Amino acid sequence: MSWFESFVLGLVQGLTEFLPISSSAHLRLAAAFAGWHDPGAAFTAITQIGTEAAVLIYFRKDIARILSAWFRSLTNASMRSDHDAKMGWLVIIGSIPIGVLGVTFKDQIEGPFRDLRLIATTLIVLGIVLGVADRLAARDETGGKHRAIKERKTLKELGVRDGLIFGFCQAMALVPGVSRSGATISGGLLMGYTREAAARYSFLLAVPAVLASGVFELKDAGEGHVSWPPTIFATIIAFAVGYAVIAWFMKFITTKSFMPFVIYRVVLGIALFVLIAAGVLSPHAGESAG
Image 1 (cartoon, one colour):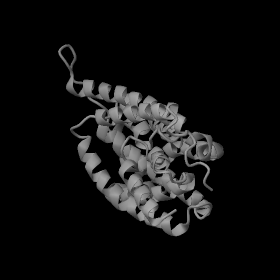
Image 2 (tube, rainbow, N blue to C red; image 1 turned 60 degrees about the horizontal axis):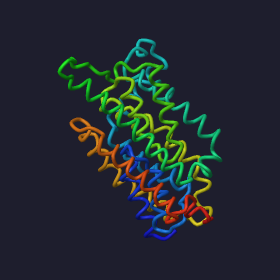
Image 3 (cartoon, rainbow, N blue to C red; image 1 turned 135 degrees about the horizontal axis):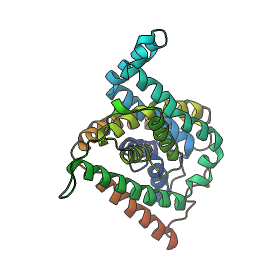
């Protein structure tokens, strides 16, 4: 991998990790369209450490408060009813599904799941799901001629059942094209949470999963055509760009809908199918590389 490739892929990772459009799919597509080798699951997982570092810094006050309350609740029974202490447990509980399924389907994630036809399918299907969920949220928030405004749930109402559902939604993102934020935010909206609450828990829930995945993949980072220096460079780029995207996205969702992302996902998925059917793009483009 050249330095230019690592710069572009780090930029793509930072731009797409927090938007509901799938960073793993875009890393795969960037390589395929440019005629580069598929950077692979290990490269993707490690560069995600950069974007998760951006989450740690952006939400540092929330994370510090949650960790402090959670640790104190281990020895202080009165702290166990504290919202932040509960959030600590809920992040742990919500991380279980992706941990179990990630290890179970490791070979599929690094192989068959990276087929561009599957990516096109997940882009379209999850785009439609996100569109439906967003429409339901908008209807609750604005009401209508014959419908009163419905109050949506905040993270203070998050419990074990919803935490696990969020976790299973996150686990769907093991398939490129699904999108970690897209799946968890869609799940949250369908369960009746506000856009801001669904996005905030989505980002917090991703921290242990992504960091664990990145550490797990460290041993494979220097294999094949991807070496350590370009991977580190891409991770730094992903961190810087990712931080800016988080700040923008959290402001965007307070007043805007997810429909631009829905349209983008569906159009991109259809375009992929057309290009593959026309023989312009191979569904396994770039996979031949070490």
